[in-house]
Image 1 (tube, one colour):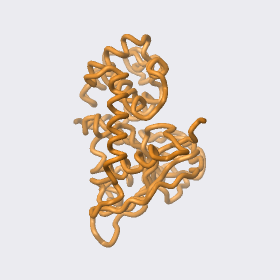
Image 2 (cartoon, rainbow, N blue to C red; image 1 turned 90 degrees about the vertical axis):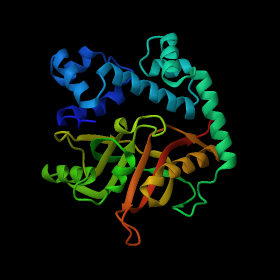
Image 3 (tube, helix red, strand yellow; image 1 turned 180 degrees about the vertical axis):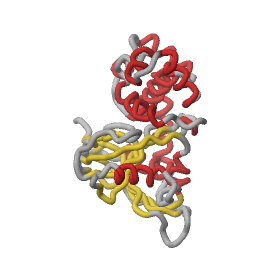
Length: 292
């Protein structure tokens, strides 16, 4: 897929935060500061889909994630993602996923329950995965750079001089921003659903103070709170198992449940044991205490 123009990246990062807002072609073109024709053509050439297709795909994929992990009603979920009526949402969801929202939720919950009973992601000869820990992450100032593409390749490149991780560090340095030696990444898509070329991740470096947007990088005020986390050591290609194992521990927990579906990662080292491609990571999901 062609690389998205640098000027387009901040807008892409804002779209998913405003899925319930007016994201029509005219509204997005106005944000971008271009005519509808020019914006539509630039967007399609960069991402391989039109703005309308992009927005609807994000809405439907987020709906699928929320159906799998949240207790929101289907009506609440549809209107919260910007759909004007339940019938339109249900029809488009079924077209995209082959099932109605209710049937998809039932299928996802059944698959999760079966996996919790039959699969132990902590017992592997290929990697180490700790048991879940539940604790609070602090608020953080972050400078974020959008990455599009394969998650595994992104994680493997941590520590490389030509990588998104190095690029966001260098952007902060060039802007004179004081940083902390802590990197993070937010994985916004389900790799079992979203095509590889369209998977979105925000690669971040921690700042010591609030900042402004820096070119194609965007300042993010991360709101901390309660998170489940687990330590993973292994190659980046098994990281999906780490998140699945952590998610299943949350589902087993008598006290905690999901507060959202966005996966958070803190890379801890570029190489472990002198082996190229072997990394240490802290993987996290936001959680909350179950209501009685």
